[in-house]
Length: 530
Image 1 (cartoon, rainbow, N blue to C red):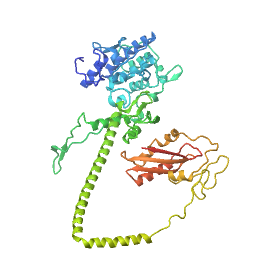
Image 2: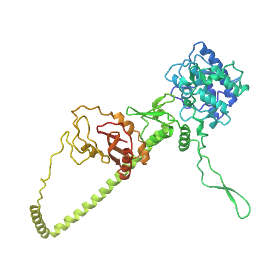
Image 3: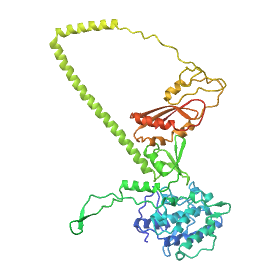
Image 4: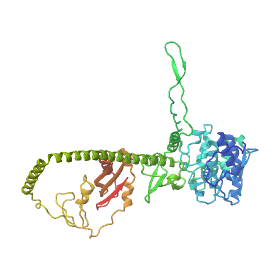
């Protein structure tokens, strides 16, 4: 493959692709739509495993990624360029090849190089990067054998404590898949890819999605308008053959759909969102996209991948930023619509005001014509009005009584009876509003009592927001929840929505009354806004 071919890769400002590197060859093939075959990919990584094993045996640590490798076009192999392997990569696809423990700036050992070999092999075969939204290799390249996919799963375990470290065993296992692809590496014990020393490899922590999901379904293409291209058949029946026009490659809707399907191929809960100083999650990709779509999380919230340990703003994750941007656009559209409706209402009121002014002018003219008769009638009406006010007097001072004092409970209400001695607390009956429960609960706080629960204790229950989805709350609606909680249950709940919706408010209140909160004998009142 000629290195002069156009390389179509978005690069960070100030970054370049090193010519003569494996990265340059990979990007040239990506631009040409010519991925590496299984034999070509194994011909690159098997001898590289042997070379890296020798360097690590000397006690050396390295950053192993495609830009740190020289590509030898004559025999289709690659070798480590040590002067580049001591510099952290800047290209996003190179960084995806680093083991999670290296992404904070430390060079990696043999265990990290096992991950790097797996990540580079995955990209050689699929042209995709390791990270959120990655799919199983055989879903993208059906020619990838199952044995190779199993080895990749072991090499790409995110937690180094459960990842193999034997590069010789990795080279041996890869060579057995296609012996003609490379020279045989030195003999090694392949069982070290399953267990080594005091630990076993845990495939559940692999970056590759589990195989139980099966192949990712093909994204259906939108049908074009029916066009009769030809007619086939004989006799009274003819079949019109309709040809569908494929979607454009740059169709944003298609890209979002494909990215969503890729993210949802991994059902494991691995994403944690940090909002208002609290951790929310972990969520699966499906759950996270739902929360972003409902505007519970925005592009300014921090997202952490619990598998790789990477942590950055949602807007900086290529896999999730498009969905956050789409959710923001939807919120802006709703705001614009409300603003437009407000202008329409204001104009309507202005028109009505002008009509009233016109009517008033006509009235003044008519009043001037009526003259003396109208003045006399007004005087009569005023006299009758004064007489009516003199005889209509109602006494409103009776029936008032003083309110409750601290430590006093009004009999017959929620939490009835005097407050028992010995540290007991008034018990509020369920089913009232938040404000009603607060009004009925009266306690002497001067006596010894255990401390109230923290806001985080209640926030861990209320801030989840899944109960909003159960009621079908639209993303454009603002919801304010006041919950009075005692002994682990919401005894009083008030829900306000904007715009107002009594049915949704009732549904949300029912959901909250069914939640289990941290238990405490005192009444705690907490307010949450979505």
